Length: 567
Image 1: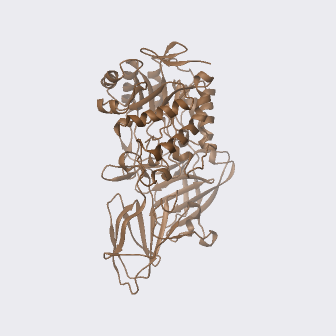
Image 2: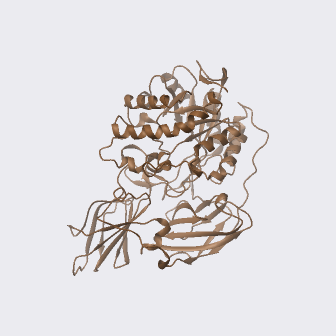
């Protein structure tokens, strides 16, 4: 067993000065069949540590139904890190931001009436204590002083940008220490004096989050953390993308020079991200600074190891920098190779092949319907003799497609701040609502999703609604949706890149695994298919399309296309 501690100026591993050179990987954004490969490539870049968030809402999407299986097996992930000879840093939140759905908080929690998030509140604190104790049952026996590899645990996450409730932070520390966590505890904030002050407590080691001007930021951090090692625990080496925006990249040489400045100053580092991975399924978050912008499916982040686990120019540039300060293995990972190129015929799925969807009375939100999926369908009868009028909705969260007598007449977008459209004569009204990703920060955490506020025609409220949750595996049961499926053969399991160019908006499942969302809005043009969801022989693909005619073919291409670059 080893020891890990904070000394007067350095981290101390078995009493000796030690620098952390870490990279972020989120186990819940990587197929578990790829964990070992990504961890090995981290070691080959020269990293000695892997950091991960823990996403509460991934483990407990429904209250009381805790899941640590398959891709949520944090213990196995930490054990694979240890098997590669690397240390681990765990950041359990409970709030993580991370451009992840609802900042990691479960919707059943944030929908609790009157709850006050990320502060002293009995209901919130009771739930988070249960959550943290579950996480720490996994982490505690894997700490470095128990023969494991976990060297640091973080309390909250950039809390100084949100609040300053010291009692709340103290309660998190109490639960953590009472759960037998003995390694040093840290906080992280941007190196702004007010944030560092608000987000810290005596006894917690302050670290910073930034991507440039290392000497300036470290000096500010040192003013608030006068002893112990300096650490940038989120060194931003790239950025995320949102639908309708550009694909963000950072120059490899510039990012490497910033890393060199940081390491040259003697600081420890956690590179955010080393490998970003993918917002599989419907797990993406969203931004809203006056305009709602949902995050894309890819979380490539322009990281050193790209979404498919291939080393990039930035990987090799960072590796060269790290070699100036630490031993780097002689072995380097192989360069990227092209993936199989295949065209697959798709056939429409018959509506008679799906079960009937169960509805409930009323115009329910996602929370009221207790629906953790992304689609709700609302239906009601129009007034007798309806000759047309203006449909108005207080707020659409996040996009709605409106049909009269089964014919689509338009859509309303939260991003475009749309609230009304004109309806033609008809008898029946249906509205399909998509939750496009929950805002992952600030006061919009946990906001209700669906049709918010009055739904009226020419100012008169509509009644008699039926609300129907639409699971994606039964999407053909909703008349507004189309499904198509096909099959293709592979000689061996392989990563694939699905080209969605020319498609509208929807979802793709390969081998029973929900890849995520596609959208003609861009910038992302391909969906990443992890090799472990494929097999030698026959494989299946299913497309759920919302906006356009269902495609008659699917094309897998040799390389990813994440959109026009923005450096």
